[in-house]
Image (cartoon, rainbow, N blue to C red):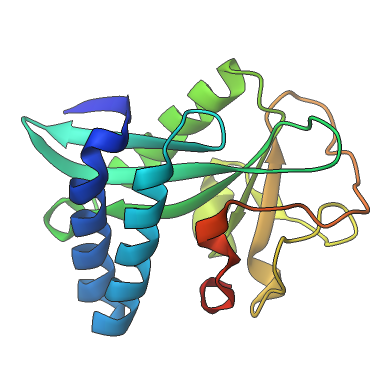
Length: 178
């Protein structure tokens, strides 16, 4: 198995992985929604605002994560981890955990200062994510599940509060995702 940064040439494989994984666990509608999100993000990979990391076994993409930049008025290096998928047949073996750790290490090495995610606090807490008040960093779109807004410093410094609402990449502007 290999972990690596992946590019736009993986767009179809990314969409397929997310569609099938979320479809199997959350139902067909969610599979289509997240598969479409992954397709749009895959088309936008530029290694600045949108980055993708994958786990491959041979030629097969069996896990993937995206990091997308949250833009502020200054040049803050804040990235959001979402979505995350591991092929159903490979779940439960720690692949997702290893892939997230890999992505966070690469991100920190590239000068990112904060990682944010929106999901299960118990799961993402394993990687150093902790509840994040909207008084510290606001979500780009109103949250349906505020307790799932999580963050962590990637440079050892406290996360600096920001008053402004950040801008997210276009595919995440869909309120159905929040």
